[in-house]
Image 1 (cartoon, rainbow, N blue to C red):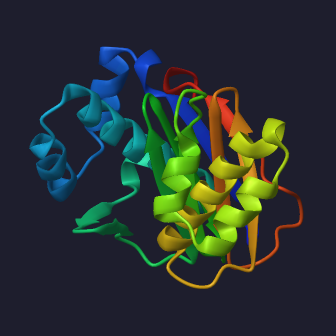
Image 2 (image 1 turned 135 degrees about the vertical axis):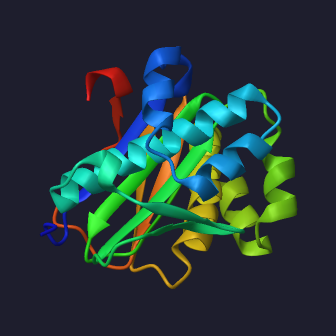
Amino acid sequence: MALTGHVLLWAVDADTVAPDVLERHAAWMGTSERERCMRFVRPERQRQFIVGRALLRRALAGLLKTEPAAIGLAERPGLAPALLMVADVGFSISHSGRWVACAAGAGISLGLDIERTDRERDFMSLAEHAFSVEEVAILRDSEPACRQAAFYRMWCAHEARIKLGCASVVEYPVALPGLAGVLACTQTLETAPVLTQLRLDCM
């Protein structure tokens, strides 16, 4: 039985995952996951994919009180994977560069987006192409020292809402050094979520 309202929010630096650890977690994947993983040309993208599915299985296993290898997932083109069991849980996966993150919670729908922060990025130009006129104006009016953080918060919020797939009740900014993110939820959480960095070989 999953604990309603409890949200796990984890991130892994995929570059720190040793080959044997990656192989062990890849063995949990089902046929559709293996097929999709093999379609990625770049080894880095395959690594991200395996780490994301492993992290998600560990999170769901903790909520559902089962073993990670028992969590069945099926790929859906253009959508998040489907959980092959009846359970009132929501989850979302995101990746950016070497980072992979997932959110999982019972009785709640979730949308997560993370982005590496880059001080050299022309974020005002990106904002003008991606944001509304009103949002660009808000960004321009913000304090210069806070503008980059505001851009990433707005960018991640847009992506998180898309992944959520419905109107969000609340959006929580989350971060690690060099990484920004937003978790969109369909209900207010009792405590603000904290993005926790983990290692797959220590779980």
